[in-house]
Amino acid sequence: MTDHRKLTPGKLIIASHNQGKVREIRALLEPYGVEPVSAGDLGLPEPEETGTTFAENALLKARASAEGADCVALADDSGLCVAALGGKPGVYTADWAERQWFEGDKGRDWYMAMGKVEGLLAEQGPDVDRSAYFICTLALAWPDGHSEIFEGRVHGNLVWPPRGTMGFGYDPVFQPVGMEPTFAELDPAQKQAMSHRADAFGKLVAGCF
Image (tube, rainbow, N blue to C red):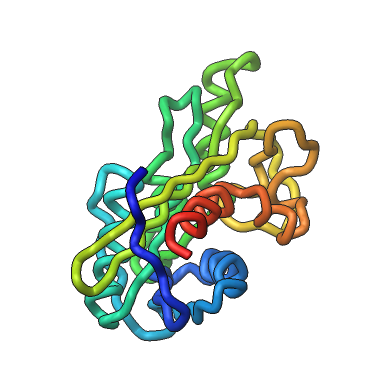
């Protein structure tokens, strides 16, 4: 097994401008003496995600923040992969929510994104395979160029219409395997304990603390 570089207590940049994601990561890291600071709070720019895999995009974000702040940075690239759609939206999970109807109306509309997925599934008929998984790839980057990658997944099925108000992104249509509630109907602490992000974090903690 590869030896991972250890993280020491202190400041860690979370290379994200997504406040929902930052909250989840902060809750997962705080027990380990780490002081998470988001790239958004530091005014660091968001690099363009030009990678074709989750790992490539996570590394792009982590390295940009590590270099920009001269500090260890953690980035997460996560998404929804739908079996019947050949793994889409995949790395383009957030792009499917982008509103670009006219200048000045940019932003993300997750209800629209969920509707796109459901529309494509509906085209395949009532017996379509509705299985999907959320994937989370974490990248740690140090200012000297060293990096570590960890991946986690949670499997489930897609439901329609959306249910629940406690999650973000595609959570209202994602029903984890063996459970009745969607991710957006679960208490946030319960969701965090079993999420793709928690799975990846478990591996990061085992490797780097």
